[in-house]
Length: 275
Image (cartoon, rainbow, N blue to C red; front, side, top):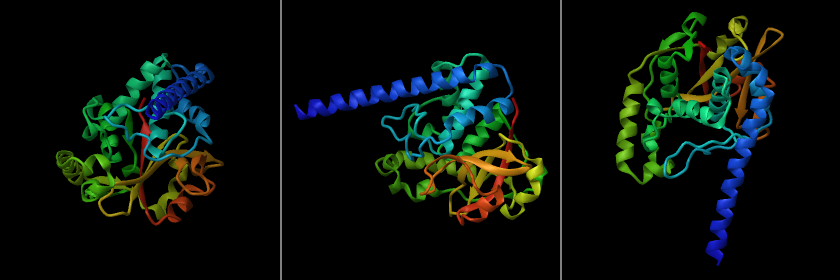
């Protein structure tokens, strides 16, 4: 009886989560109806406001077997960006429905948009960026902002495989991740020193994608979010993991100050939306 009760609780808990996500998407789509067909730079700033205050929760994508996880009520920095842009694209399509939203989300999150196990997910945000550049969704502007060419050895997941349940239990997956890491380690890209970010505020636009590089060994990206401009000053709109926040916020500090106050934050890459 106890086991049956637990399974019943899990079933209705999952059902409530699905309903909550469906209701959240419906509410957002209704509020944003007038933006159908608009540019991403018109949609993203307005749309992102619907997520302010949404709780920060890590590891919401870790489900077995691997599957497309939809969670609009608990966000980390990446899923905040993914969900916002997926809804924005659905609005551009004039079809802001769950089916269309999920198609865009899956195309972001998985290599070639195909869910084929744990290693098919773009765990490294650099891989996520590569896909979006290739699709024509984003264009990098870091070089023109004064960025310098860099290259980094990426191996954080394979080196720390015991931190990841799926990798700790499957050596074949570790080898697949190593292959992905090798490809990322061979890439060169432009990064703007965080000490120079204040000098480019005037060239940033609300909605630009901010990718904060990591100073940690083997890791590519530490955090992501959107540029938020006020009085010609740039801030970060993001899902904050800071202990006193743990929610989607606009940073109280300007972007450069925010970066300098975290030793794990390296320089930044800046991307514009092409659509």
